[in-house]
Image 1 (cartoon, helix red, strand yellow):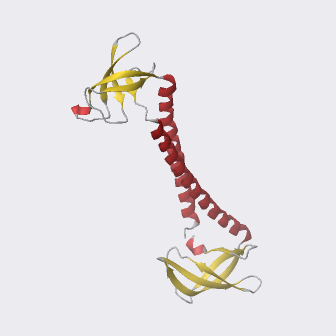
Image 2 (cartoon, rainbow, N blue to C red):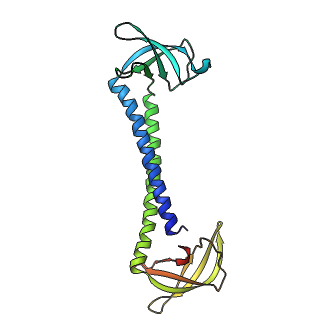
Length: 212
């Protein structure tokens, strides 16, 4: 169970990571779109790969013919491995005649976008869960009632340490719930100061100030 400060840090870090990821992909996709919609496909021949290595795919030197029939030496950014002598269909734009670009296949683009959307969906779903938990703290600040609870049992469920606690509510009723400590391991009979409120469904929402 995370405390409020940890939840805020997690939510902020996750949102920042998701925004950076989305922005990076948009920039990357924009570059591809620029070559697709404003570029022209040319036939290029690989002259040399990086450091003369076979099957290199970056910093590849190529030669191609422009619209005037002139031989143009350029650098190519490839999505697949190539070697000297290979002939490739690459895209070039008027703005960047010295850099050719190999567009991934449509199926690769679709698969990449699908994976990205799935990751973003999972990430923002987690953010929403964290924000819902933070709402609990806001409600506790408004509706919370102080009480002292007693540890009645300590248990370990699937490796998660929890403790059954019991307290008397503001109307004199006995209430029981489960407390998941963030640091100290409680012992049966220990006392806990808590702040709680009870939903219409009867569910108890609470926090332990010392964990904050």
